Length: 307
Ligand SMILES: Nc1ncnc2c1ncn2[C@@H]1O[C@H](COP(=O)(O)OP(=O)(O)OP(=O)(O)O)[C@@H](O)[C@H]1O
Image 1 (cartoon, rainbow, N blue to C red):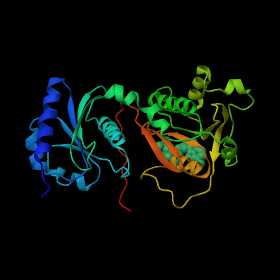
Image 2: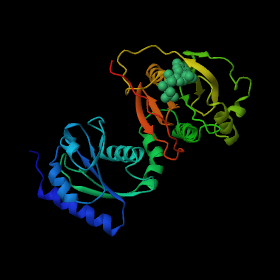
Image 3: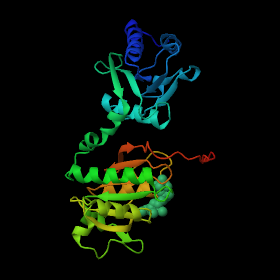
Image 4: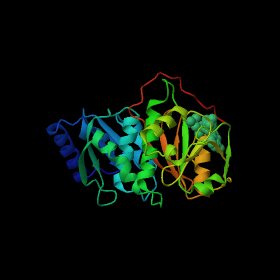
């Protein structure tokens, strides 16, 4: 039986106290190791608690409990700040927490596997500040300002769509000469023939223009200095057998992974189905941004039958 230490019990009590004192909305518990969920239920009684587990093992036994759970499945070396952020993002995406909620997080910040830390987090401030800080972790020669410009544009496209309809799209940023060597026009390219100043993403009018044509098939190719080099491009970088992506990713997301495996570019894909923005580098998803403010629509769930 997984143990439930006095220290853990004390942190649960303090978390409830802090939540009440600060009129916070909920508690997030980040678990690295399995725990005794019966004891945990007693410790939190009537409180609104979401339990995020690093692994399936950490959540073992949670099925019979009252708690909403999130399985993180992130790389072992992911720092606690990233794991907490991911847990908060998923909790909002799953509608366990409202966008503007304040949350008391209980986690292991210092000693592995031991609950020893508490934070009071205001979600709108924290999640709004997220991208610049995370984009710096990409460690690339492409200026972070250019990446941020494109990520912000992508998030807007994912949230707003066009004329009430969801829009998916793909941007490939940096290393544009090599990227272009893997591109073929998919048809009419609306940016062709414009001079460089008219293709600069620093200009809000150009960004509005991109929003207008974002739903066209194919990718936008953007240089490191934020100039659109081409649009409506089909990418055909070589297949890399070792690449793996989360289940359910289609051709657009595979194209994003493959072009970043073949070049030094960063790809930013907006999924048409849910507006999620994913940032790819070296063939991997490095960052995922959920479109919190996307208008909700009722939609039937697509289901896969067992193969
Ligand atoms: N190799 C490619 N290069 C550029 N664009 C592509 C490529 N493959 C697919 N796309 C674009 O992605 C669109 C959607 O394809 P698909 O539905 O298979 O992708 P997906 O990854 O599931 O994305 P979404 O979540 O938006 O549906 C295509 O209509 C096309 O415009």
